[in-house]
Amino acid sequence: MLDLLLKGARLPGELETRDIGIKDGMISEPEPEARHAIDLAGALVTPALVEPHIHLDAVLTEGEPRHNDTGSLFEGIAIWAERVKTLTVEDVKQRVRTVLRWQLANGVQFVRSHVDVCDPELKAVRALVELRQEIGDQMTLQLVAFPQQGIMSFDGGQDLMRRAIDLGVDVVGAIPHYELTREYGELSIKFAFDLAANKGLRVDIHCDETDDDQSRFVEVMAAETIRLGMGGRVTASHTTAMHSYNNAYAYRLINNLKRAQMHMVTNPLDNSTLQGRFDSYPIRRGHTRVKELLAAGINVCIGHDSVMDPWYPLGVADPLQAAFVLAHYGQMSGHGELRTLMDMITWNPASALGLEKYGLLPGCRADLCAFAAPSEMDAIRLIAPRKLVMRGGKIVARTEPEHTTVTWDDKEELVDFLKPAPKPAVPAL
Ligand code: FE2
Image (cartoon, rainbow, N blue to C red):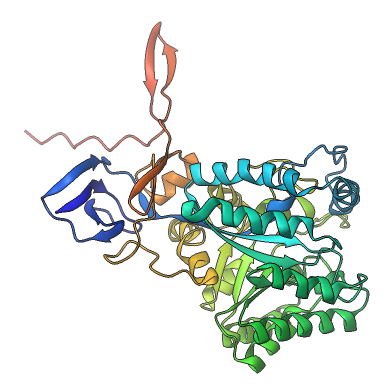
């Protein structure tokens, strides 16, 4: 007998609803006999949302010690340098505990967080490693050793990267475009790949997050991935310079990224606000080539990047907000493209993180998210509340959507933001 039968779920890409069985925390074929049943009444159901790129150590520091008045990357870096001086392990843990709850309420259960290692005491790394232990299986956290000030250009940078790995970080990062020279940038990538290959870890590098069309480190990542046979285990994040490459170079590069089987993460919230700051009109979008990468068959994911930190003051840790922005900023408003946006916050990042037993098929773990919307398009359009979030078959979050009313012709009416179903044609007499 099933533990639970979810009735009337609408799965991505399907028109008809279907039932989902849950037994022993796993998805199972539906059966009529179940201890409990929940009627989802046509709600869209996806696997748990996956956050492939966030900086948890910086969340909720907006305004500390001062606000970013220009909104620029460089003022953000200056403010962060001041805030870092007061960082403590408990301060980091306290802020992250809050945001993990926000993420779970939004249906996010798998999170890859970059953690700044440019601190001789590695306080942020210690905090996140401890917190990962503390939360147990309530959520899954992957941690990336992220050298905010560079590996080759920061005193003791290589040693700090190694120490972070020894403390239990899962993924090796780098920031080659921020290093002092092109040569240092290449060396930092090679260092990160060698460290990851030796320890059997994945790689996720902040790469070419600039509008400089001469910033071309992602090609070095592709070459190292191919050389070391690390296809499928390497992610390039941001890669905004790709926006400004000439088409001939971009064509060759995208072919090599495909050959390397690399994953790509685009961060529309931060990069829509931070890029193009040195341009006069027309101002470039400064965004990686999402459509071309997808068309080449490369796995592209959406990341949130920041939640209320010196670089981005907004956000509620909801991947749907990032997908909504990419629909506009990346011109992905085609009907099929809106569906693809949902893949970019679920299956695509699950692949980048190497998650197992992920999905909606029998045998997958019952980590699910039901939206207060009947379709992918409506979920994005409404940034729909998450009706129900399940982890291992148990409900871990729920939102009861509030009713909205208007008074019209002196009568209070309920407002439904769904498009009314077409009225049946009047039969001919
Ligand atoms: Fe980032």
